[in-house]
Length: 249
Picture 1 (cartoon, one colour):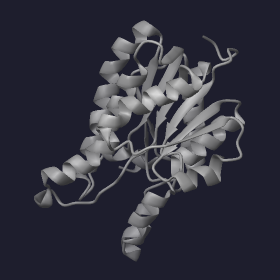
Picture 2 (cartoon, one colour; picture 1 turned 120 degrees about the vertical axis):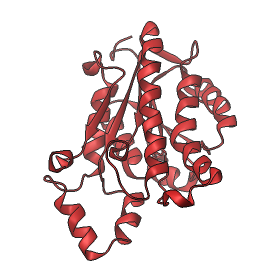
Picture 3 (cartoon, one colour; picture 1 turned 135 degrees about the vertical axis):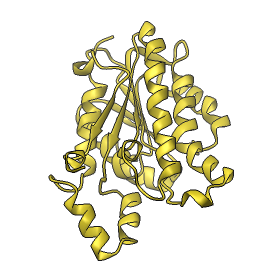
């Protein structure tokens, strides 16, 4: 199915803020329709309530037992989806010696398990169109060491391994799956982290990005490309978007 076909619905999780909100906005501007999913219904309604080509779907995707119901409810409303962008996630800074299974489960529930279950649910027969594109948001944290980020980095590394293997299966059905791993981007989640830094730490962080800290639109524009047929030859990959940060390593 090409982009001239009528069904151009893209499911975007974490659509109430940050990269998810900017991605939804850019997809709508590019002629796609968006299923906007997040926990905060009021924020979704504020952002998409007046959008003719948007469907608001408030859902707690950290409850992985309900993801099958979410996929079915989406399918019943709009038919097979053209794409999936899993932006929903959580970040937690925790020293290794304080690692507990409950903390690991909290982070993995949304960052990793939800992503895997969403891909599983939407890859079933009749749930996605031929030539659908699935995109999972990883993180630069999976590629460089940072104190306190071990659980978060592990949750994102798992996504990348999952996508690489899943691509081999999904390609048989014409479905592509890729990961996008951004560096530091100006989002609500990241702003809270930066506020906790000392002046010296904040300066060092900024100095590590030759082209400055990323903006949500820097990531959203690449996601929009990956969703499109222009990226038809790309699957099973992780794309690092870091404004040249790793060149400073």
